[in-house]
Length: 338
Ligand code: NAD
Ligand code: UD1
Image (tube, rainbow, N blue to C red; front, side, top):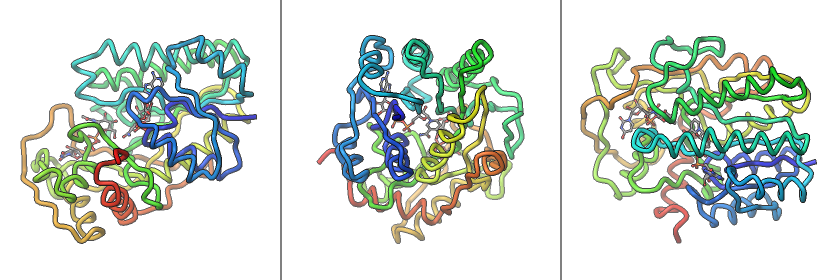
């Protein structure tokens, strides 16, 4: 009995591999290295303390997937593989629909062929769109998304719900992540974005190591306590632990179930900058810049359903998130490039 982890060499996937192994699961990793590096796999195996089986494979390659299902006894899939850059998705929508939506359809078809009908899927708080007030709850309306990336997450959620309606043997857990930051406490694995980061924490850490001159704070006139955008940052290891609970749940239930994975706490951009400065001892120069298109003022979760049903709750606070992001970045200024 093993769990297949697609995108298992990526940021969240690599941390999840380690938590799953720690919890006693056998895991098999699939990745095409589109947005990750073999060095991430090497270090993940090192931290997991075992030679986890790996397949270099694209989720759109049905024959490649069949080989994995023939060679391994897969009971469930944690499905991380996908493209995730919001701006790029506006430029290349077809690549996003092909990879994220098309890839998920192929994966589900091959799973069904082999009688494997349990999946934990990486969705996003982005499916709540612009119109819902925080704290966001799982039963709020979804779909008013503002970019193709977000739309792929919404469409995949709907596809997976339809699959569960069509066949009662399917069990799908849709996890809506808030803003994952932080890194494994060893400092050996973490987020390694290509080029200039789009997201706040990797931008801050690259300013801290001197790779970028200063942070642009996108807007200081939002209706928040200091005018800057408020988000629900969650430590990636807490997020990874949520996947262990989600797999436990998927193995014992049928149908589709949705859970927020967040802390329930909102921090502004400047709150995070100051928390990072405190944790690292490094000053972060910043300048106020215009709002970024598509951003909302405030986005944080109501995480109570995950606690009630899965028995999962985030344990790490913002200081630990900043400390671990900094340990990873300062110890690996060039990420996985040696
Ligand atoms: P990531 O890019 O670090 O990891 C994704 C991995 O999937 C990469 O290793 C990449 O090489 C692989 N991959 C992409 N397309 C593939 C394909 N067609 N076949 C095989 N492998 C493929 O991203 P992440 O931050 O770890 O995110 C994991 C998942 O969680 C994604 O689906 C993402 O959309 C979702 N998510 C991420 C965030 C976030 O802030 N990081 C927030 C919400 C949701
Ligand atoms: C972004 C994506 C969202 C995705 C999420 C994953 C956009 C519009 N949204 O969300 O779809 O699910 O990442 O984590 O890209 N900020 C700055 N300066 C920066 C970078 C960010 O001030 O250089 C601010 C943003 O305006 C925001 C906050 O920091 O208020 C967090 O931004 P970010 O890390 O990009 O995450 P989200 O915008 O929440």
